Figure 1 (cartoon, helix red, strand yellow):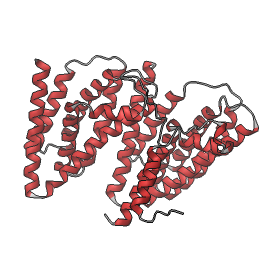
Figure 2 (tube, rainbow over the protein chains, first blue to last red):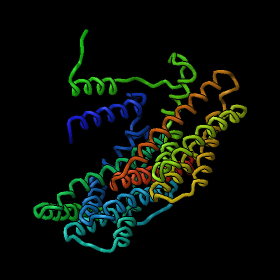
Figure 3 (cartoon, rainbow over the protein chains, first blue to last red):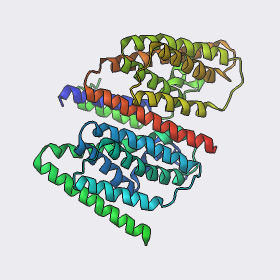
Figure 4 (cartoon, rainbow over the protein chains, first blue to last red):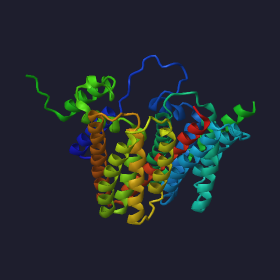
Length: 200
Length: 202
């Protein structure tokens, strides 16, 4: 990036930070869903969610267009549906198993560079997104700013996908492909760990 | 007088100011900015109004300059009219539900890169402006300062639509248009979560 572009980007980020600033409530009660930051931190506070969401980005990058944008668009939308079900108290059996399975299967998909049709990939990601969303929906505390919380929550999820896609850009090199497959193996291993925790 | 010359130092100073800023106090007369700026700041600091207008501007920008121009003239005028109608009514508390529906609808249309006709774009702009304007106007009273504040809101809507739609119209790179659509999916997903939240009655 050129120095001038970097400067303009820094100015744009600063302007956005200024416009979106909130009251600095230093004494927000524990677990209170107060605003954007609380919502933003929620998805990245659980390693199982982080692994699966980054894996979606890695797999999207491996698959290339159109999956590179279809999967990250599908996941937050379907996750929000799952979150809505969780909010409304609609039961979903085996949520923890589903989340662990998502890390295992998405990690395996990256490790083995699986290339199913885009519809199949979207369906797989969508099904797992429901489990992640439902878990978040049922765990959400009572709060005051549903709007800012929801926006922070979704943007954090999207950023995790973007991190995965960013890492996945190394796929263009032979050594990068090997690293990605290794990363997929690590994600799958993490999934097995969370499955063991859910069963135990 | 101390001057800061390097761009990095200027950005650092601006970042420190941003991080140490206090409450925005959009509704306080003590801001001293006057009712028109109070109205403007109310719009810019209210995501339930700002984000649907942003989504509409993104949608218009994706469709091209004629759509952007139509939204630019329809939305602020409808917002102004809706606000003036709303000023005669008592305050209502269904704003979050309406906002979540607009998030879902407009965000979904942006994500799908929906090929709308210009008539549908006009209708969407008018409806969004009338509904959110009405909700803005309710409870404001019929004073002169309230009317001026409403003008500030309409000015904010106009500036936002002009800037965002023009920015998106100029985007030619495929990935940039995809990024706009991803942004739309995030807006729609936020709307879904808010809808669930509203239905549960938090």
